[in-house]
Length: 450
Image (cartoon, rainbow, N blue to C red; front, top):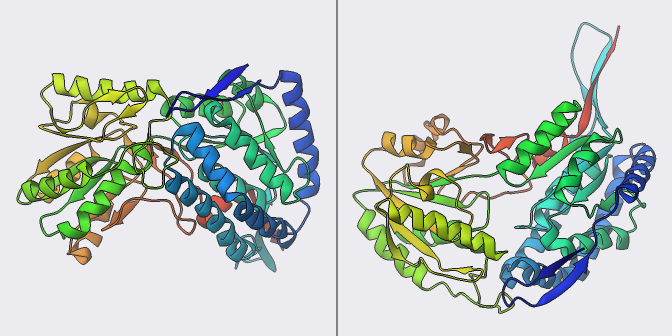
């Protein structure tokens, strides 16, 4: 038995019991039996259920947003935006999935050759708490549209959100077993992966969780997609428009109270504009309103748990002990951590070399573009990078220098249903979203006719 507590005011929200092993086996068997029928339906039939799901999302948006804000502290406006993004994802696949899953004709020396895309079966999703709806939808929707069924082990501190997601699929009329919430503890995941019913695994979360899941999947020779941590650089070149750049930079670091794998976690600013950037940036950070996530004007809420705020505090304090300077912020109160900006930071400090999953950011000057690239790549992660410049054409010729899954020019790194999403190095492997994400959990079958 475990309880969920509101990170803002410590009030009790709900109590839950993890499923027993026997219950889990029944769920997996049911999902497997459903997969046999679901996989044989045509794409348009599956998409009809997605259409209904869009209506269910719209009808339940307020309830979904409030539960998210209560359970993990996301400011309510951002919770609404997250639910809306799930709807946009559904609409993207409604428009494109049928074309993406069509047989592909190939010219060979045979009379006919083509490729088909067939579902694998039951796919396990291991999902995080920071975007409790979006992370699940970007995994589950393409997998289900491709003809798979899914079981989802969500983060325990957003168990209420997990239950609401399952209810959405039920309200939309999906066959029982297409989407199932798997309320299990972390130490039960390996047993699920080992079950012959599971054909693949997708995990979004920490590097530790990803390596554990990937190891278990590899031992069973099962497909895995890993979307893990990131330490994205945000690079401001000498010719950048600061008036346009600074607001984006603030959002890139502090949205969702800094709890995002693709947040800009290291700022690199050309030395010639460093002081001007810092003046505008600090002013903007000072104006961010912290408070009750349920208030419409709150931008910074609590971190999802007290221990997460303590982790950020330690990373900042350890960096200060090594010589970093706090320009603004640096204080913690329970799960709240002030928006914090540090200078005098070197690459060996925790706030630079580790992923900081909260509202703290180092700002480091550089003198040359080559130095900026070197600093940007000086990380074990490779999820994305943002670069701000007026000379877009020149920068386009240098994109290959960045060892990342994504390069965003004059914009913050974000996930978009139309663009493949994922990283390299210790940020994981595989892709979500777009056509690439739709085809992750399919059997790409070659057919050759002489």
